[in-house]
Image (tube, rainbow, N blue to C red; front, side):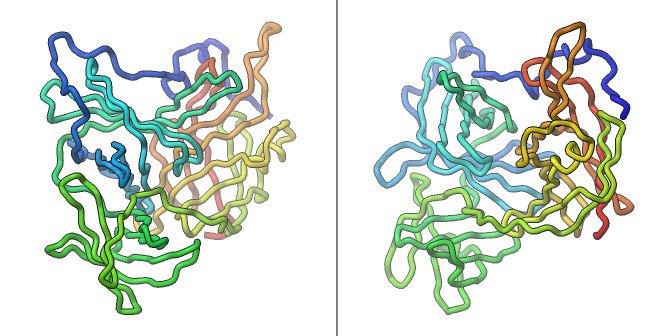
Length: 371
């Protein structure tokens, strides 16, 4: 086995992907007067790069009158949307910063959104983080994305809406809609905009009329009854299934594991994952976890591929030099273009050590035995 990580010096470079940051924003600009209170409103991206996630943000109030923040995230690869929903909001009028915290999220844990209003009061920059807390209560933030935003007059209706009658409506980019209750789909249908908002028509001839008021609150009317609708993260089920095995090449170790590596797919997530324990276990490295996945999206129609933000796998290899142990090497997305070509996936991976920095930006590959 050949280790492609050349020198320790490379790993001492600063890595924005690994260094935790508790605040991306500096103090408010001198002389800028921000509003005394949070102003409700809708926000959309000022520009979206082709192939990247699209975010829309809604500062609204819930049924109890609490100011909350809903963020809808549309993934163009999976053509699905998910939501950071109901985050309780705080506001710093000195800096013009709005902070929303989420106890649970589709990232798999706590999340936080920070949005700083710019000097023109009509544009802002929003940062999305995942949050982990150690035993001492110290937080570490990992930035998932950021987006420049401008005021908007609409919100995204995609994703899941939890109705006060106990039902959930999930709307997809394709125009398809599901109605579920207690975790089971009870009806399907389609949706379209009309003069009142968005109407979902189901196969059992029911119509769910969704409308949003001036406060950004959404209500659903069905069978003559109107219910408050909360925009929430989609509820996933454990529907992972093995779809193939394949050969995995790791650029950090210049080593290919033959056709033993398992590829799984989750229909409800539209997500694939590779069990990296199969890789580093086969290499006889002491990979310490079995839930050790490289997760990615693949659109078979367009062949677009993207690593998910949850991808972080442990190799089990500990880097030692001159008698000092620098820690265990992990793999995370590098930001390089991923692709599927000629029956093979290519992933841009940064191999790095937490709290130290990157060792190598490389390209790993996976060649499934079955396509």
